[in-house]
Every structure is written in C-alpha cells, then in structure tokens.
Image (tube, rainbow, N blue to C red; front, side):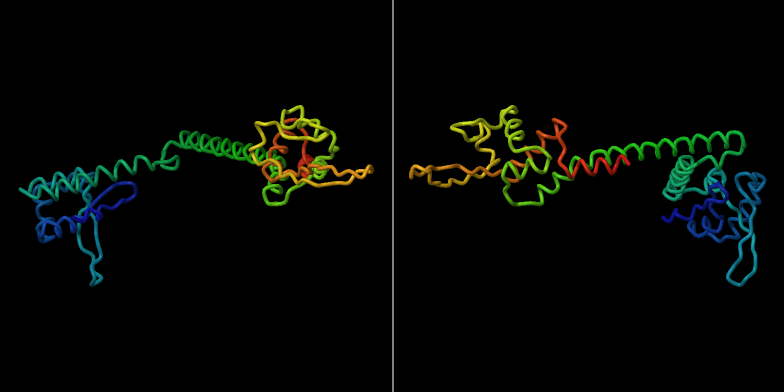
Length: 256
C-alpha cells in the first residue's frame, strides 16, 4: 500500500482523487461523479476542487482530499478496510510530524512571531556563550598537558637533575619535594623510593662501581626516572603550582 502519495499543500495534507481511484481500482470519472452526486464537493475545506495536467498537455478536474474529506468519500465504499486504515494512520502520522516542525515563521500573529524569533535568538546566544566558555576552559587546561604530552612521547629515562631543569628548580629542591610527598627517602646518602612505590616502575637504577682515594671500590646507585615516574613527578609538581617551563610559556602567551 503506497501511502506516500499524501502531499503537503501549503501546510495542508491532501491526497488526490486520482490516487484514490487508482488504489481502489476504480475509474477516476466514477470517483468524481460520486463526489458530485453525494454533494461532497460542497465541503470545500475538506474536498478541494483542483486541476491537473495530463500527459497530453490538457487540464482535467480532480479533487484534493484532506483526511476528513478522504473519510467522507471512501467510507461510502464497503470493504477496503486495509486501505482505509493505512491512509488514516499516515494522515495522523504526517499531522503529528507537521505539528513538531512548526516554527516561528508559521505563526500568523506578527507580534507572536517576533517574540518567538527573539526567544530563538536568545537561545542561540546562550549556546554561543556556552561554547565560548568551554573553549576557554580547554585553553586554560591545555598548558597543563603540554609538558605531559612531551613526556608521553618520550621513551627515555632522565636524571632528577634533568627533570628539575624542566621546571626551573634545582635537583636538590625536587628531591626535597619528593621526600615531603613521601615518594622517596634518603638512605646512606642516596635517595631511594619508599617501599610502597618501589614496584610502580617509577625508576630504573643502575649500579656503578667507583674507586675511592684510599684505593677501595664503592658501589653507587645511579637512579633515573622512567616515563611513568616522570608523569608522577609532573602530577605532584602541578598540584603544587609548579609548572614546567613549556607550560609556563604557554600560559604567558595565553594571557597576552
């Protein structure tokens, strides 16, 4: 059943009497005669006289039926229940769709149309402001992740001196911060991770043997920070308000 033949004519849903005739397998002339003989044509708001151009270029009469006009006509014919139900359901569906799609430009009262337009513009403006706020928040957050991106791209280990330099502080100061944050402690003059951090993969230690003046050898642990360890340090320093040089420069640029 092809109910897609219902048309929207200037906001009014109609189906041609020609389509009804075709789907009921009746001659169009018979449909026209029934409309006229039953005086249905007097219901001009429901059954609308119209013209159509045939393939031969000639114009002929037809009627455009609204949902009410369709009901008035086809319910004079016995049977065709599936046809009637399908068309009425489609009329109802399209009416609901039209109601949802109505906007300010379909309001006839110019004052109400203006109010609707103003409301729409205010809503658009509010959305634009919301977008700008989100953009600013992203821009404010971006410097905080610039150095983190650099860390994640690198697979190399770094000494505490190298990491500290990235933040503009001394290795001594960074070691002290990591001690205060319970990441490492000093044992025998060397910084070692607390037990609860040892298995987190923060460091990669190398043991070096050095010769003392007395001719004795001593084992020294050379600790380097892994990528994961650098991220941990970055999180700690960022929380303390200590930005990496790269991030600080970006913040300054953003404030200009």
